[in-house]
Image (cartoon, rainbow, N blue to C red; front, side, top):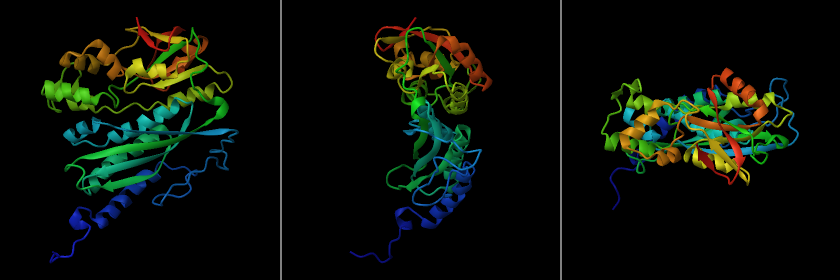
Length: 356
């Protein structure tokens, strides 16, 4: 039966005028990350990025460039942001999860795109989220060239949203880092994390909110901050520090392999780059573990093996390097304010991680 009132998109939950206003508000957050290599500004159907640029500051003079593509999300850490009503840091997590993956190939992140899906038009919320994405891109020295904002009124509950991110990078073919040159005797450098980063939150939330029944504003003395602050600490972006090391060793192949320590922890991520007949021995206690991990383990009575496979335990990125250069690389990383520790070594064996 026909309705008395004509139906519009606004009646279905999407106001196109507000949507356009939101996009205009996000424009400066993207433009602040651009260099002259971004050719088309913001708002087109696709984004154009010049792989090279005819200017001294940006000229790369690639010989055999290989593109690197990565994608990831933030996961249920978003639930913590929603509980706190604080949304300006999850964008940093979104960028970090992809650009840190890109680094593992020796690649330099070039540009980033985001996908933001929301229950309804909320310009203030969208700006807060994208401000974090923009901040992350500035830290990662890559351009936020575009993205997609989807309003899905029947898909999410009020106040809910989801994020996905996409990074494209580049690496010279002869400079690709793939782990194939890893050999027994190489040392394992562990680059400190800033906490949980963006993994293990399904377990962390179950322990903290369902089992212990804590609120996000509960102050935890041993953490010197509230529950929400501890769980919402942004993922560290390693791009600038690792790029400096890679640029320093242009000729010598001293960085044998790199791993971003995400879901699966050291146990599952390091073997992804190990060649046959190589295992990594990690020395327990060779780095200071942030207190959030022991707090979570005790709060939920989580077995040690489970902790090792779910969380990064304080090491967010690993570099396997020539032993002769290990201390020099460690100093360079620390100069870029990334605490770094020699946490183990490579030995003959099957591709796995052994804790001693």
